[in-house]
Image (cartoon, rainbow over all chains, first blue to last red; front, side, top):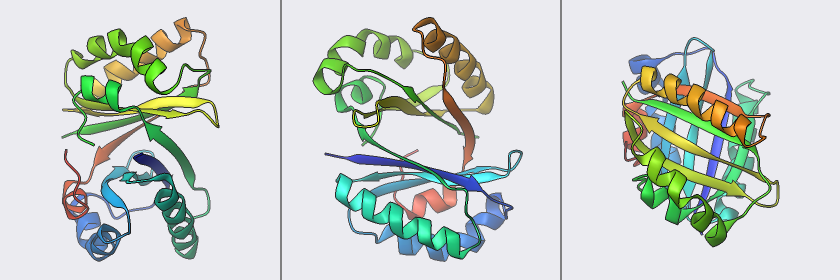
Length: 100
Length: 100
């Protein structure tokens, strides 16, 4: 069953197009993660937080990635990582037009 | 610019198919919210949390909905609502196959 990760953390930028440019190599790497269906990259310059919403094919791949990404963020000096894992309710999500 | 809301809160069920059945009317109502592109419904029975990831056309509609939904959840007796708002980075999200 599909597994959703929501991750966000304190971030000091870059934002917007500069973020795209700075992190496109990382994004290409993340795109090849085993079991990743997609990731939406999130950013909030006003609150100085960024992160992502990830959909994985299964909970095992989501858990493995959460551990790997947490360690990578710590390597960037980012410690206060909010990470939550959920199953997706497909019936309700279909009613509200979600593409899973 | 598209605006993403991530919302989750303590929830005591129902879960899975029973959740779909119990909340399909609410989902149909949420589907008609102004500016809503889609909502993914999330559930974690082990941690007893549920919520959703929402994509709105713009930050104004996202903020209006966050206020309305927060009041609705409080009406259900749910007080500890985690709600964060983000912009989406479209360039990075495209690299990781997100459908916005």
